[in-house]
Image 1 (cartoon, rainbow, N blue to C red):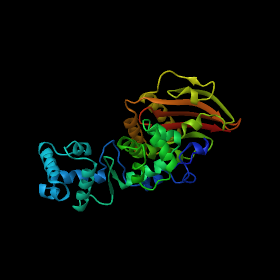
Image 2: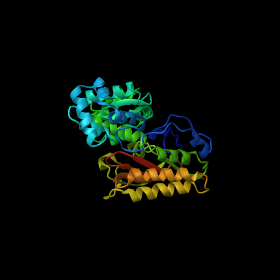
Image 3: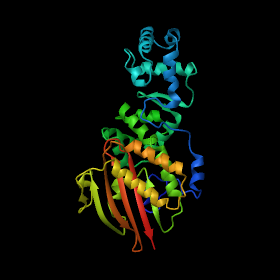
Image 4: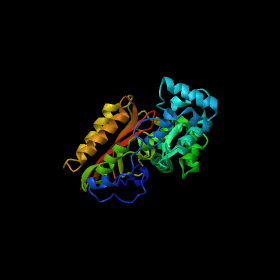
Length: 338
C-alpha cells in the first residue's frame, strides 16, 4: 500500500502520513519498490510454495516424522491421484485441519522448503513476510468506512480491528474476534492485489502539475468525501449504490451501479490527462491499467461523482468507485486553479 500525500482533497480523506510527494521523476520513484507481493487471489503466497512442494515430494517416512501416520498416509494417497496445488486441496484431505496444517508448515520449514520469507499458514492462508507487512499497514491506516467495505460480512470483526489497532503482526490481526479465514483473505487481497495500479497512481501523483492536472488514490474515506462541510462549495453530487441516509440532503441518486467499463474509462481518462506530456513510462501505464482490468472485470461498483472548490479561483472534479463485494476502491480527481 503506497503512502500518498494528495494536496487537493482534505488530507484526512486518504491514507497518508508519509510526508509530501517525492520530487523524483516517476521512473526514479519506481526504482525503489518493495519485494514482489502476491498478485492473484490464491491461498499460497509464492514465498510459501515450498509448503505445497514438501507435501508433493516428501516420502511417507518424512511426512510421518511430523504428522500422525494415518494423516501422512492420507496425504500420500491423495497426491498419488493428483498433486497438491492449493491449501484448499490439502484441507480437503481427511483428518487435515488447522492443527495438521500447522504441523505441515513446521515440517516444510524444518526440511528447508520454506524460510523467513514465508510467515506461515494463518487461517488457511499461507502468508509471505511482504504480504504480512502490507496487511498490517492496511489495517492500521485505512478509514473505518474502507475497512467495513473490505469486510462487508464481518462488521464486528472490522469494529474490533479498529478498536484494537495499531497491530504489529498479521497473527494478531487473525486472532482478533470476528476475523476468520475469509476476512483474512479479504484483507490480504486488499493489501496486495493492486500493487501495479498503486505504482501507476504514485507515478501520476508525482508528476509536476501546478495549475491544472489530475491525481488518483487507491485508499480514501468515501464517507468524509461526500459530507461537503470542508469545501468552499460543492456541486453535482450524484451517487449510486450508497445508502441515501449516509449522504447529504439533495444528493442525486442514480439507480444503476457502475460496471467495469465505466470505471476503466474514468481511470484511463484521468491517467491520459495527467500524462498529457508523455512523462510516464509506458510500461508503468500498461501494467497499472492491466492490473485495474484484473480487479474490475465482471464486478459492480457503488460510488459518486461531484465537483467542489476551496475558493472562487479553483475547481475540482471527483469520481470514486467501490467494489460492492471486495471493497476494492479507486478515486480520480482533476483540478484547475488560477
